[in-house]
Amino acid sequence: MILAGRRPALAWLLVAPALAGVALTAGWPLLRTFWLSFTDATLGAPVAAQLVGLDNYADLLRDPAWWQAVRNTLLFTLVSVSLEVVIGVGIALVLAQRFPGRALLRAAVLVPWAIPTVVSAKIWAWMLHDLYGVVNESLLALGLIAAPLAWTADSSLALLTVVAVDVWKATPFVALLTLAALEMVPRELYEAARVDGAGALTRFTRITLPLIRPALLVAVVFRTFDALRVFDIIYVLTSTTESTATMAIFVRQQLVDFQDAGYGSAAATLVFFVIALVTAIGLTAGRLRLDIVR
Image (cartoon, rainbow, N blue to C red; front, side):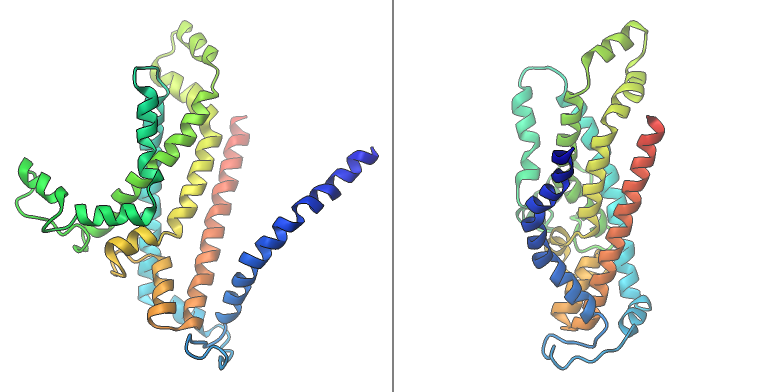
């Protein structure tokens, strides 16, 4: 009993250095950003900042560019994460089968995820170039298009293009988590289902999907978190184009290009709360669904 009572105190003592490090590296910048959001600070003269209350937030909520960035971010997140989950699960189901060369294929699938995001975005920027890109050359050779397309410059194509590049980059992450979960599913369940006459679809919906749902929840939460704060892949491909600008790009534009630290900090604070809210809703919904299934 005495040992059991000491364990929580020992646990807090052991994690205290890590918590202190997180507080210094993440907590202080977050509090500083929150404070600056109530001022008219600029990068050129941060010391002379004056309190302006909620003016930055009021201006932000009336800014059409901000709401365009919010729409772009939510659309990017919804489409990219949905495609990544569907394609990732499909790839994992294939890789879970036994066939010659499976180990080599598993390693090859992870290559897009292993490449740094900025590097992969730059590679795709050249591949999608309207004059010299291999994508247009291939489509022209196949007769699928009549003229080269400006994939990253055309406002009607740019957002879909960055979604496609992000799906190519992040799908292996979902596939990896799903594959790990599939490896833990007892094979006896499938054998029993086959004996009972269950088809492939029934086995997937009644056995596979319920058992891998916790792993899928983790994948969805992590990918949603990353997609909501996406910056690098879109900035490399389309820079600050309004049709693809996300909330993170909007924040960078206000802070760096316009040097408006107060307004940019207000936008950054809202981004933080949006991500926290969406993540909390996702985790709560996932737990409720798991409890219902159980």
